[in-house]
Image (cartoon, rainbow, N blue to C red; front, side, top):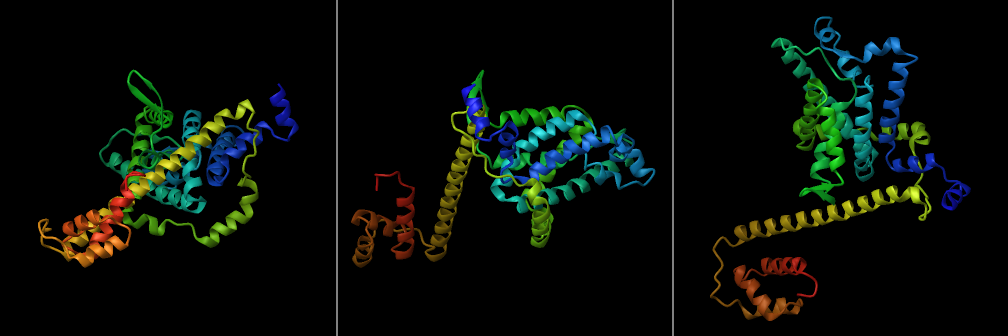
Length: 344
C-alpha cells in the first residue's frame, strides 16, 4: 500500500507504466492500437462494412475484386487472431528499438509487398487447381510472422528454466503463441508459412527488396511532425522499489543481456572475417607452404620485438607466414586479441 501510494503521489499511473513500454517504438504502438481500434470500429458502429475487410477468394477471382487482398490486411475481423498477433507484435517491438523506426517501417513495407505477391500466387494456384479455399483470415498475419525469422536468428536464447530436460527460454512464449495462430486453421497455416517465406526473402535481399522498400526521409519527417506527438512517448521514469515494475525491470534486464550477447556475436563474426582475410592474403602473397625449418631473418624478428612481442612469438609468426612481416604482424595481433586476459 505504501509503495502504491508513493507511486501515484509522484504522478505515476498504470497507463504511464505500460505506455512507457513503447518508448522508441512508435510504429509498433500505432500497429497495435490501430489493430484494436479498427477491429472495434468494424465490429460495432461500422459492422455493415465488415465484409469489405474479408478476403473472400470467390470475390477476388470471379468478381475480379483484387483490391480485397490488400484491404483485408488492414484490419482483423476475428478476435482470436487479433489477440494472439498483438502479443507477437508486442514482442517484436525490440526490432524497432534496435534498428530505428524508419528502417523498421521499410522492413514492414517490403514484407507487405512480398506477402501480397505470395498470397496472390497461392490463391491463383488454388483457383486453377480447383482446391477448396474459401477465404483467408484477415489482418497482417503474414507480415507479423515474417519477424519470426530475425527473432529466431538475431536474438540469443536466454534460458530461464527447464521442463523435463527441455530448456524454456525468453522466446518460448512467442513460439507457442505463433503455433497457436498457425494451427487454428488451414488458411491461417498458409498465411503463417507465407510470412516465414517472406521473412527469409527479405533477409536474403531477394529482388533487392531492401533497396526499394524504404521510407523516404522527407516522408519520415512529415509523419514524425504530425503523428509524433500522438505516438512518441518519453522514457519511463519508474520507482525502483515499486512491486508492479518487477516484470518491466526483468524485461529491461533481458534486453540489456540480449544486446550484450549480440555485440559478442558481432565481435566473433568480425574475428572470423579477419581470420578469413588473413588466410586469403596469405595464400595470395605467399602461395608456397610455410617453411618451418628455416629461421626467419633476425632484422624482421627485431622489428616485431620492437612492437612489443616476445622473440619466440615473433619467430614463430614469421615462420608460419614465410617471413612476410605484414602477415606475421596481423597474425600476432589476431592471436593477442583472441587470447584470454592475462595469458599474453
